[in-house]
Image (cartoon, rainbow, N blue to C red; front, side, top):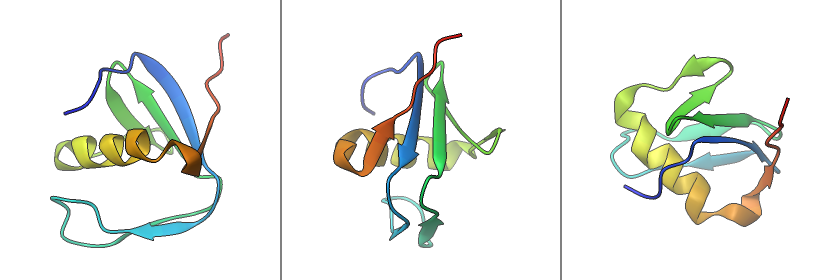
Length: 75
């Protein structure tokens, strides 16, 4: 697994369909889809992703920074 992330928000620049290692089906993401990573746990639309999807999705985000806008907010 990759580095630990305490608090970040990543927004996908363009719609994309990806096949991630360890996930048996294609994943379809909309343009502007937000990925929240809090205490190294990935959330989408306010819900935690299932445990088997955590590592592959987080690795995909970190390995493809040009596909995302860092939209982390500090309140």
